Length: 85
Image (cartoon, rainbow, N blue to C red; front, side, top):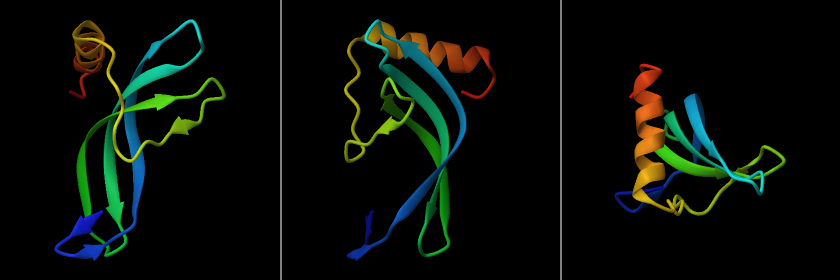
């Protein structure tokens, strides 16, 4: 993370997650998260991120391809039904 010319490391705490599973066993997840920065500050927010078949997250420099609007809406609606979006 670059904030004002200073690069900070961030750890992410996942608070909630919903997922769309594919036949390949990959899943696209929508998460409510807290970014914990190396300077001691934090920010709450949301992100989309892929999970590999082994359950690990697929980091891609903050970007996850969302295949279609219908999947985007499916995930946000699922989160809303669970009460966190």
